[in-house]
Length: 124
Image (spheres, rainbow, N blue to C red):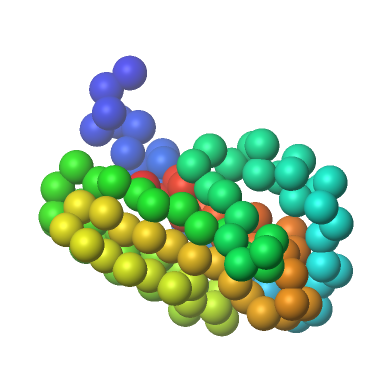
């Protein structure tokens, strides 16, 4: 399929997932801290992400094709995060964008942290 045809579908999917996460964050401010086994299960489904800070955060480095793509990605991540009531740590160095998700809700990772990572993967 042509990528220009897929792009609007991908953007719609990203928007719908972001809205779902925003609703979850507003409705369920407190989530249960995940156990190590569940963290590993969720990580296995999230290419590129790894745990950080003794399994209390998620981290990924994205490498974008152009500086424009990198800045657009950062803007989209910030917009989604702001709408969800949480903005991850964002570091940009030329084409590399590093995201760290640490929502501090339970001093450990929750399903919502992984849901945010999933949406950010769709944005890249």
